[in-house]
Length: 328
Image (tube, rainbow, N blue to C red; front, side, top):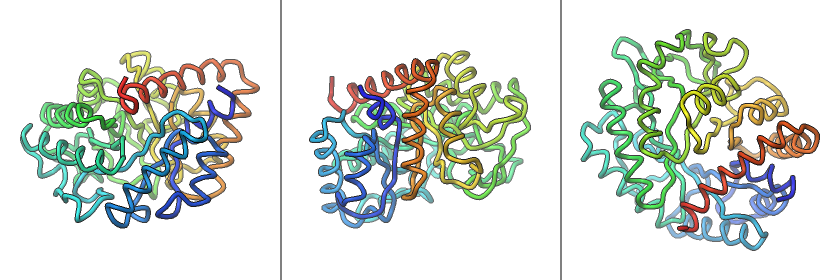
């Protein structure tokens, strides 16, 4: 792979429009994007959505690229990009049994796969304590660690049995937080032992279930890393998640356009690459996308350690694509 290809494969990008327009072509052809993520403005009708996904994937192949990740957030409830005529579910708080979780995931996987979407940014594996007014209370499974683990892993297995990559979020857990990282940088002042005894356990269960991806939160955990929030933290993403917990699947940031991220995109990209985070999510059109790709290429070209880490990251990405997107 060229450096451009190595950098591009690590970008999961949003765009404006309902078709394979010039903007989307540029992201795929020129920036060599490894994946795209869809939001409500990209979705109008089932026929339009299926055509968009088909055209984007075919264009990536024509450009000599590996198969394209096509992702969406389809949790059900308050976070569901596909609405009627697609099946609308009330969301995780209304899922109480493994049968409920299996039904949601089976129907959702069938509908996503039918449209050509191959990655779901779900399930949420956060645990919201009953005595906390959690920002996640409308998105988490009911109950404690054990039930969250059971329901989430049922979803993961069901999604992936039907060829949809599942992404557990938001490591190492944001159920205790009361501020929204779309608008603030929340701080969770819990130590590692506390997190390992509760919040992290569902993610360990997800790993044991073979989850394809784990999304890092934009939350600051000063007792784990007093400098960087989880989505930019070598201590959390590389040392805790990969080294200590042994996770070798895909890792990704939450959207780098969210207000919890106050750094220049170039600083974010360096942290992501040092932390062995595979995919950088930039979900909105704008200059950050091109600047992120350029900084990735520059670092791969000038920093030997980042280059070696980059090769390992691309290997993980291509392994997931081979398994789920080509059926081999």
